[in-house]
Length: 318
Image 1 (cartoon, rainbow, N blue to C red):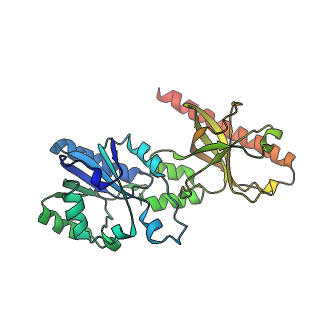
Image 2 (tube, rainbow, N blue to C red):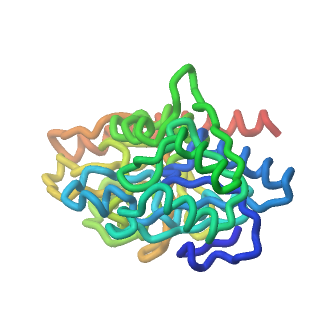
């Protein structure tokens, strides 16, 4: 997959089968659109192209609104898309000036003339152009005017619920990690750097890696304790992770820290990837460090039981 950081970088000799959108989370619905786009590209002798915009339009147009957090950083999105089969990924800077582009100019000047679009694939709720004024009906008219094929993909449902990035964000914000993973079709990840903490975990026999999430727009699941998979220095481990303010320790700072099972190495400044598997419990305040330590032991036992089930299921598939 080739990555471009502007529409202007795109080569002029490609017949594009194209889709566009924020594709936040690259969930099951997105993956179906990408799969269909790849099928059309192969059948028609074209090449599959995904156009997205960065920063997120709401962060540009409503900078005072800090509430919208995203499922993917742009780096995570690139890695996710590398396994999708698409051939070209165009990341175009979204600015206030760009937001004023009229829908007809957007289609004609950028998609048809610059990205050489011959076939367009869109989702069931697609809108485009200034103020999202462009509808599917307008797209149909423009496809006839500018000679490109158009296909609309129906909504993708999971247990009769239409999958969307908004629904997944709400699930994560309420701690429903397992249903969020189902809608994503994968495990929800965070990426960060291991930094030095207060090291109280060591005194409780539960040393932790404190994880700094550098992208302020990255959505974290609801505060609580989770079973996670940890990818560190190209090796995988299981662990239990806490998100929150550690009320037993009277800390005001919101932190992410993970106790990695059967792991003792010093990994400060290392890059770390964490995949959320299951929510274990809410974050709680305990009367003493001894009570906290007792609960951590219970959490570990519960997590290791789930790890055994995961390993058994994986072995059964072999």
